[in-house]
Image 1 (tube, rainbow, N blue to C red):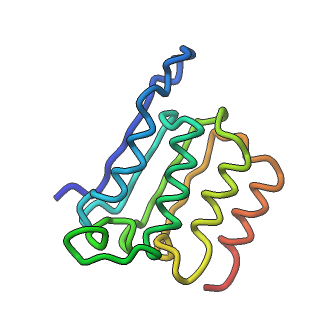
Image 2: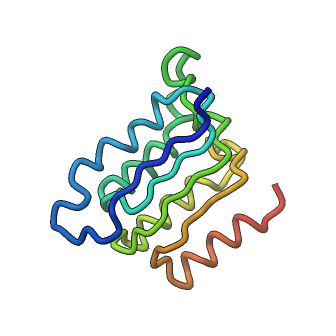
Length: 138
């Protein structure tokens, strides 16, 4: 059984097209099997793709659905590890949206055990937000 999926882009790729097509990757969170508990996006998401991922994670519970459609996605409750790494080009405001999608009892990421945001330019405010959520009692 596959438990983890990783998507990676060559770190040396500085081309204008380095993140071309990445807008489709966040939508995989809607259709991956529930056995997948670890997702990694390593230098592969564009700003738009990261924003889409934040919106998808926030909307998972809002939309409802049965077990065979929306409810079958891994992020509905069994995603244990999420890594969005080495993406310094992603805006801080987008990372704030991603971090906010983790917060709350109705979050699809309430069972998240590992969050890896290394290699990004989160800044002090973004880092403080992550720590605040991570250190708050559940």
